Length: 495
Length: 95
Image (cartoon, rainbow over all chains, first blue to last red):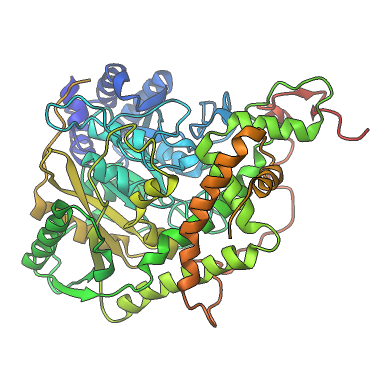
């Protein structure tokens, strides 16, 4: 039975349609794998009843013969998505016990497509983190290890539970969200595929907000074809999100020809970082060669403001977070602190937020408050937004001269050990997103594809960045890269 | 720009997060590390650049100013830590 959860979405879809397997069988296999993997701490709220009910409904739909591609597929949902009647906490204590009375558009789209939710997935608190260590549920654990070393590694973050679950074959795919790299970095750390679409492609309605001008949902899957299938099911125009784009959703899977002859791939010189491991440089070089061998033209490009992306991000994202998280006041939902005799409403706010938010969330809310405060708004917030405009202009200029996609490493290192960054200052952790954060600031689609193993046997990923709304083309380039890289390694089961 | 403990306390107050006095020096130090990182932005020539408001040029859509999904008091109150008689209950606000 456990073999069933190793299937890709495409393989399972074909088997379901042929009647070789039922959604009930797939779902039971997934629930069993989840129960046997508590050591990974990937699933934090299991939903077996909902799963079995949806699996039976999917089997009916499959029998009727009009089932969409995701019908009957067991998927995990990141805890950031509001799911009706099911705990949705953004991995924060402040939302303890919160069970939404509504369903996020993304998870509703997946329900409509017949997908089967098997549970909610661990993450960094409010998606703020790069190692899943800020979660109120405790760390999610990477199924990969450094050879025979039993040290636990991070699955990355913030979508760490999603990455761990898919890499360990607990479910066939999972949703993630990406504000600065939170889909692509964990995908790279766990040897799976993750795509962040163009800002506006996926509705943000019902997804607990971190930084609204940067947040995008996307799929985390076992390969590029699955990413295409699942992304299509997640995308829609949604009147409930005013930044959701009113564009037709293409047939992404149909775009996967693997033919990239004549495409121009840009290599940005600013992504060569001091102190980057040779293995990452080598992987990047091999990636260039693979795309060139497939018929693409590889050219050197310059994105001069790259260096300023992380500092701009650490103004803009905390500023938006401080506004978005103002809603957690202990009045309408979630945790409220016990009050002392004589405490008024201000004490209630202050105690509730001190107890409910973890250290990293508090830090970012306060940094955001500071950069938005009177006297500093222009110096920090407005300056960061101007730099953001320049970062986007860098990309616009290379696309305008004919570059179709940009190839970079996905992360500056392989997965690191849980606890290893404990004594580092916050900025050291922020550097994890150095290659991914530019993409959020410019609103572009970006995809991480596993491309090799390092000397310790850990997966490494490459990132491709595409033009706005050209996810289909980007997925096809990623498909060509995936075919050339031939990454098939899996973590040895220890959990 | 260096943040002292008094500024850290003021920011915590503005953010409505209770920070104990003995935690303020460490907090101020963290702010200074992060703000030191952000200071790099001062190297960039932003003369004549408009601050970005949206990554895609789009006008926010408008809709009629009407009730869309009303009459859901029970659902609205369902997750409240303290709801009484159809209202959110909070400690005394006005003396």
